[in-house]
Length: 262
Length: 318
Image 1: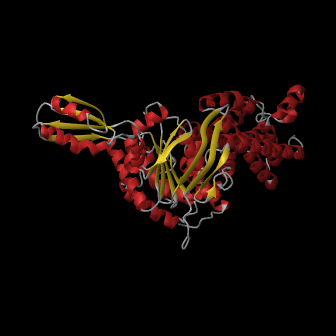
Image 2: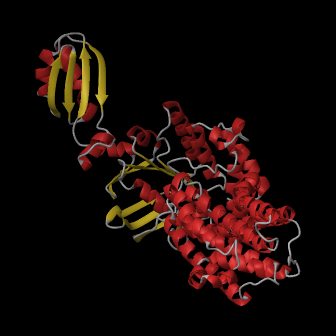
């Protein structure tokens, strides 16, 4: 009999190492799935259309933070949500971790941490590629590195928590519905392809989109990467991201517990 | 626990009850005690509450009321401690498909704080013992159903648990794989590990288990060794005696014997229903020999778990 007490931190580390190991093997597929769409957008709206003269060059400054926000959030949501739907709905594979000698919430929190990491990785991959594709971007600055890290990690955590909630709440057969009904509108109304300030022209929409957490990620990226361009008040954005992360973590843990314990 | 004076039961439940919403009683006032080192079986038809009971004992199903102590810890308040001390083999194999065969074991052990070098050593030993050594680096999808089941057993043992739970371990296995699994269970039992298994196969329960709990509709109906349970089965033992000639004259004499509830002649076969088991056999032989007949064959059909189960529940096991 080995040591009877296993510190939760050790269990957490072991489960995280499992996810890192599996994610590393899946990395090419993972990146293809989560960054291809944003990069295609970069090619058309950040390179082809400006070259045609149909969009002003300055638009790239709007697009870059937007696609970063998109890659980050889509990766974080999907990396938690999809395996969880599969695990709980079909294969029951997560069972071996639910039998680990630690509170089962730890398994859920680990998923959120792993999802945050994957979101950050996707953003790190997209940033240089987008910059290369679009060429020089007016107003781009890396002087706000601290803010960039803070926004990236907070956003990753918020969307990984959303992934936890969706992953435990959605039945496997409704996964397609999640993409078209939740993620689709979220992307379009997420201020990814236009700045929030630009919605002054449609005031009702400007306030309606505030329920969409992606808005704060896009605007946070703008505040961090293109601070000279118009962007949402930084404190409002940070508070909204923290509230989103906390709210969905609580909801997600509750839903997880309900799925995991019969 | 060296020097302990009394042996603590490996599992104890008191008035255990589980109700699923809206109002489905899956386990109803269940009192069980499983001793250390016992191979304990739960026998009952599908839907009897066996899987829910295992779920509660393995901390995966919430208790509605009552309590369950497993390996010295309460499943409700001390779930992580219980989990540290048990190994679980699920009804349907659920290996981690992101990992290969040996990784399934090594990572699982790591969740239990087993150091990596020890985990690898143990994993290789287990794969060897369970006949999976040549699949060490294979993907789990490449394993057959029986091999996956054995991988699940290996996984349940990687952290050296005190109590091993197996839920319907042989369902879906071919006869050969089933016998192989029985061998593995006997070996684990011989090592002194406590094993709790559920089954709805009578033969399996009969052959493997030290003691059996017969469960139906969430209730414990009977609990004893397989042979004592069978002795409790009502109805008579069937004694078939084959002679070397027509048994018609013997049948009448047999019916007059004490303890015989009925006897009939079927050519050379004399079929006797006995309330005294095989005790009436000498008298039957004497009766035949008195009429110039010699015994060729004797066959006893004992009251079975199946007959007991039918008498307890009014329905068949499978």
